[in-house]
Each structure stands twice: as structure tokens, then as C-alpha cells.
Image (cartoon, rainbow, N blue to C red; front, top):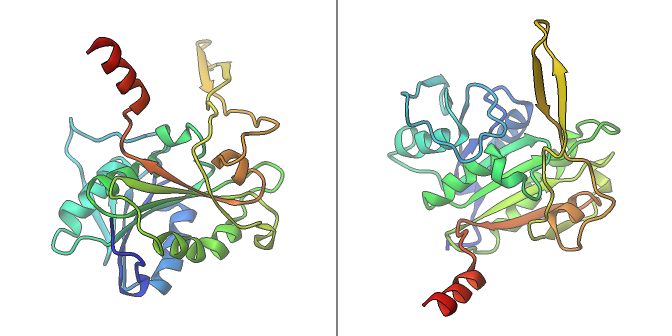
Length: 261
């Protein structure tokens, strides 16, 4: 566990994402954290890496481009970025905290297994650094309301850092899609819900007459179980879900050991 509470004014913070070095959510997160922290470093992908998951580049060299002091781009995945930041860019003085985002769109339910935003925090956690993934939900009706994340970001991060968590745990935060930041109902600590992205495949035809397929988004269900990230975030609450690096299923392990010896 880290020593809670963490004092952001004395912290060295690493920011990564999966939307790329020019993403508005990253620029917003960087601006806010620079006002609150001792040092803010950005190491983010050159291009969008949404859906990259916890992938690592092993079959080609990585290029690290310095944009300005404490700001770098990597031609790789979010996982590559965090690894490069900790092992190369900040190797003499590693970060106290990893923040990933602010992602454009939700990372709820099974999204976390695909998400490069969450994967950056998996990597930070593997490296022994407290890590928080941040996402701003949006929809067609309201569009992207960055002011929701902007207004509630520091309060949420400070609240989570006020308590210790195990070293194999990261936090996944989703800001709801509401018309105004004042419409946010509060913060809920939630468990991971269940929904499957890509429930619909959209078929089309390219100009040469060859078929192609586009993975469609998951439609919103009428309701989700109480206490889940999906229920909280889609009903106006900020959802914060502790995720564990431990994927083993204890009950099945015990049952199989009893049955099979």
C-alpha cells in the first residue's frame, strides 16, 4: 500500500492516455494537474490507441520524441508509454502517481479489458505506482461535456488518494454524461458491471465492391444492477471502481483442488 493520504502538492505525476498526445482530454488533465502538483510529466502515444488493451510492442523498436520539457510522445501503445516513462524518461526519479486519460468515452464493464486508458494504469500498478484511469462519458444528445470532468477531477482524485489501497489495485473512474457539472449526484465506489461492446457488426461495401465490417458499439440497457459502475455512471454519479491485477478465480480454484486434488 502507498502512504495515504498522498499530498499532490509534493507529488510527481505521470500522465498517459490512449487517445494520443494531442487529445483534448489529455490537455485538460495536464492543465489541471499542473496547478495542483509539484511536477507533471506527459508520456503519451503519437496516435490514437483506443482498444489497444494491455498490449506491449515487442517486435519493433520504439521511438521517443521529446516535444518540450516533461512532455514526450511514443510511437507505441499506452503500456509502452508508461514503461518508457518509468524505465527511461523518469528513471532517476520515478513518478508518485500515474493518471491516464481523460478518455473520450466510457470505460465501464468489460470495456476495461479492451481499454488502453485502463491498461496504462495496469502497467503503472505492475510497476508499483498508484494509478487512476479517468474517462468522460458522452452521448449523442449532450455531446462531450468536458466541464464535468474538469470540475470534479481534483476532488475525485484527492478523495481516492486519501485512503490506502493494495499495491495490486488500480482505480477506474468514469465521469457521467450530464448537462452541467452541478448535475453530478456524487461519487460512488462501485464494482465492475457487465456489458459486451461490439454487440453489432455493421457490414458495408468498399469502392472496389469488397465487403467490410465495422464493429458497432453496445447499446444501452434499460437498467443495470445497483452498485455497478454502469448503474452509477449512467445515472449521474461519478463511478470509481477498484480493479485488481489478480485475475484468478478463487472459488473455482478451491472447487477444482477439492475435486481433482
